[in-house]
Length: 398
Image (cartoon, rainbow, N blue to C red; front, side):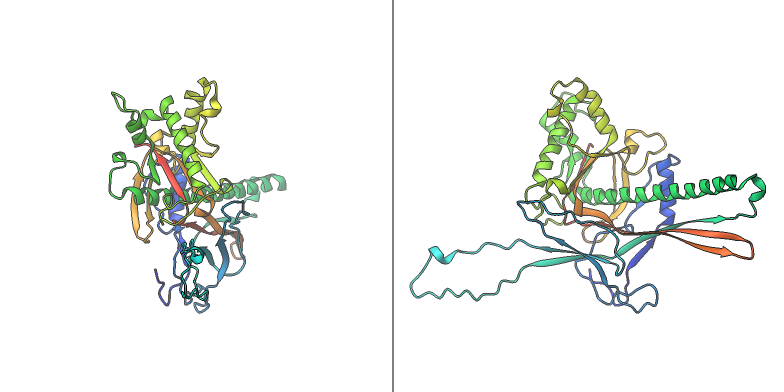
């Protein structure tokens, strides 16, 4: 996608969706559709140097950090930290394609044939640029003289003010944590769409969006097929799910084009692998399978981080709510798509597939001398990116 001559770094105001997200997390509302299209940057293959700043609108955005996707296939490489940088706004990821093999002429020599070594072979290198940013702020006004009448000591006043600051900090933490989950949810939605399009999720299983229930019912047919609601409490299904997850963990370590939306040749070594599972699924496995299994090491799920829900608890914390995503995200072409799915049990992805970059959390203040109060503006900026050229697989039941 080529950027226009007057386009600049995109910074999206997301305070409205963050207030809605807080309601979903606290149980004040049901799990509703969320528009994540302007929250997560899926990157661009082409970046125009005419992109300009938001201040004087004449300074060119500069690349602030470059990530080289360069991993020796037979060894470990240091992890790439997605930390903050002081100047520039753009995150650039550079990757090299695998060159193709050619004929070794050493064993096909012909008398009089010219075997010139002077042919230039240009390496195939591509770049992705991530230059979108999300931002929101939490504002709070603090007075001192006006509230002194309500307290009998400076210690009580300081305790009151500390309580307010703590409430602001909790609000910021909830919103930042939920944005990280939205980065995962956006990728899950795009992956499901890539494998299914408009097809019903219960009609098949994809390679990147894996319907564990469909595969189980196909592999182990019963007189009454197992349902999504009962699957996570069924010991045989849990064994099959654990087996499938372990298989994918092994498959990720080999070069393949099957496990990413961009169909690029990728592999994920074990120290780059992230597995996140729904806690309901993990707890059900412990109670309904592992507790009665003598050699539980052979049936255990892979080590993973757990989350109590993907998008929100809803108003009932039911499995249908906790395992659900309902999002508007973007596909590999940058087009907005709507994806709704329940029954998501786990995601498995490469460390470089998604992340938070250039985190900037700060506080600015302004004192109003006329009314004698201080406004504190708690601001948060960060880039949240999805790179569809990296491995990402979602596992669900439908």
